[in-house]
Length: 89
Image (cartoon, rainbow, N blue to C red; front, side, top):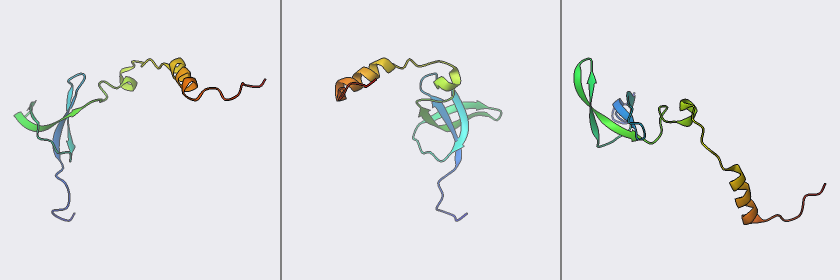
């Protein structure tokens, strides 16, 4: 790799904003926030990135269903665009 052109790839802690769960990974993201995490080498300080959704809170991974108002969306569409011609049958 060419020196001086690549971003710093380092350990970073991501924290789920909803559940508060943290996980340590590596990233090039920059942030001014830090967090102290207990490791096998003792307490270490890492950059902290707040994430709105992670696997800990995402409906697909948690098994929770989001209620989708499909009927409301259809009515909204009909109000906005109207029914130009009746369905033939």
